[in-house]
Length: 265
Image: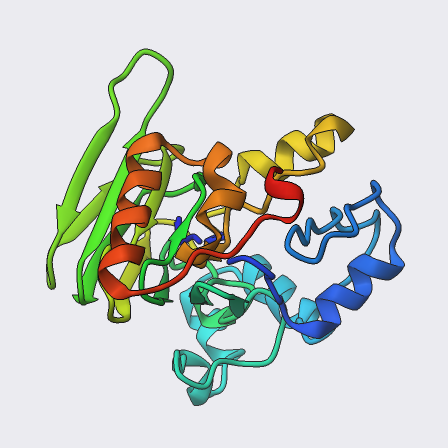
């Protein structure tokens, strides 16, 4: 997803600042200096993230049954506010093209052992994301405001599935499918995503390729929601049909494209 993932996955991604500091201090592979390509290094070995209650999550996972798990949780831990989410890593992913808010087991411990998670994506006019996958979950994405264009491919040898979704239409992204979303209109698009795993996972090909080969340093995080105005910068990462749709949306909405320095990537 957002898958808008988002895992959802947003140009100039700003995960919670404590996570950025941990990653910045922890070493890892070199990253580009271009702020438009904020590739995060993997978590260093034996690293803990600030704001995460590791002890509580460990107790929940090792509890012998549901009764003992419930006894460990306060009433308010069974509530998640998507408008005012907790200020901890992975709860909110922000970018120039939109915001993704995630209720996963790491951000909502009450989900531990319940086999489900959810997210809400707020996508700006003409906003889109580059393709990404959820490793451990199928995603159901329901449009609750505006329209959404989706594309996905489940594996090599299958055809691309493309669909246009109006308000209250639902998209299905099978587990592991490479997928993307695009807001083709001049108003904000909002969707609600659910997953059949409390930790659906996120794999962004652009970031993964960068980790495998330094020659891919110019690629952007796939979980990002991107501004349509930046289409020329990310054209090589998205299907031609999506790029054409973004171009059309920009013209219709009167949004000027941002220039790419040097005229090319």
